[in-house]
Amino acid sequence: MHFNPSLLDAVIVAIRTILPLEYPADAAMRRFFQDHPMLGAQDRAFIAEAVFGILRHRFFLESLAKIETPRALTLAYLVKLQGMNLRELTSMISETEAKWLAEIKAIKPDMFPLAIQAEFPAWLVEKLQCFMSDTDILDLGISLQKSAPLDLRVNTILAKRDEVLETLKQEGIDAQATPYSHCGIRVAGKPAINRHTLFLSGKIEVQDEGSQLLGYLLAPKRGEMVVDFCAGAGGKSLLLGALMNSKGRIYAFDVSEKRLNNLKPRFKRSGLSNIHIQRITNENDIKVKRLAGKIDRVLVDAPCSGLGTLRRNPDLKWRQSSQSINELKAKQAAILAAAANLLKPGGRLVYATCSFLPEENQAVVNEFLAANPQFSLLNCAELLSQQKISLDTGEFLQLSPQLHQTDGFFAATLTRKDVVKAE
Image (cartoon, rainbow, N blue to C red; front, side, top):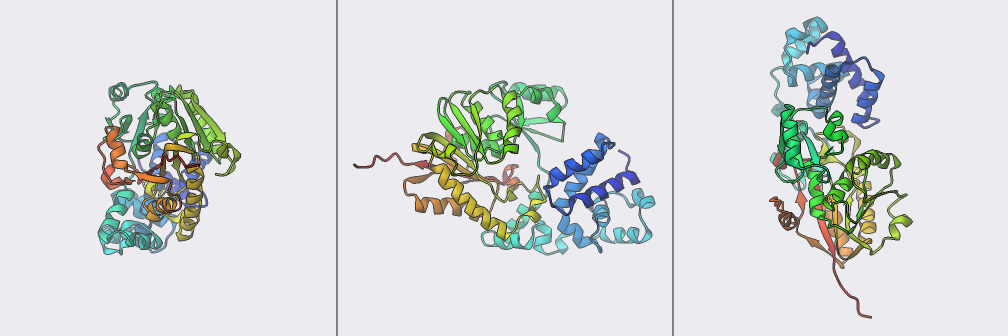
């Protein structure tokens, strides 16, 4: 692709549009492309990669730039992180810019403090230092600066993984079976999967392998009653439906009409018939309460900081704060309590987040267990082993990009003790 002044200008305008971070970066990026329909597919791919690259490395780039303008961040990114030759930029930059860009060529990230090297805001480094060494914080930060791979989930109702892999390979798409999930595929590069016949026919969905593993932890059986408590756009509901072979009933609850509307076309493509999509006003909705004590399995993918998804959503670093984490903890505790109330004795609940902060994870679960002695913890490694998945992160599941090439999912599995009360 030929780099030219208009492409440079487009990246700068995109960064200027997105950097106030009033909206999630992916939504702002979509809006930018809608407002610039003349951009070709290659240009759009370059602009999107540059914008997200700048967001991933923003602390470092701002440290290099004397004036933190969208133009300076873009030039620093192209020269320092994309290795663009200054000669390619000569006609597009001033002498002052050329001198500054030549100077920053020699600057290395390890010349900067930990927060800049790890690309974490100071408040987050402080939290991480309570339970991680500086070396581990840096490893985590560097792993989250890489772009995430494209993971697919094969809809086992309509296709087999081997068939899908064969089809993709025949088309020259570099695809491998995921190491843990039995229905996952990891694809190299960024092919336009949402226009692929496999996707349009419902045989594959885009879903991180970590997210897929939550379904195997819950391990719903055919004919059971299951609730996906915070269903969102329904990726996990569809996985649970396939694991149940479309037998039984899944309630997909969410407070967002918009997210549930995104589930409807996916549900239609999937060939499943056992998902019941229901919008609820909050965790205490009457639709929830009438199912109390009737449900075999409950999945709670709780609203969280999303810090485990920084490879995909680097803007979350600036959209979250210590205060927002505190607000989330209260919400997580309330949702877990309401969801747990649905379980039958002997039932199973998986509480999950895509965060690596113990205060959103272990602390929420431990506080719940202390207040609800009728529940106990199951060992996630043992449950996955029963599903023939060899992945041992201890009693809790804690995935990380550097160790597992997934988003940073956490999960705890609880069961309601089968206790018959004396009259």
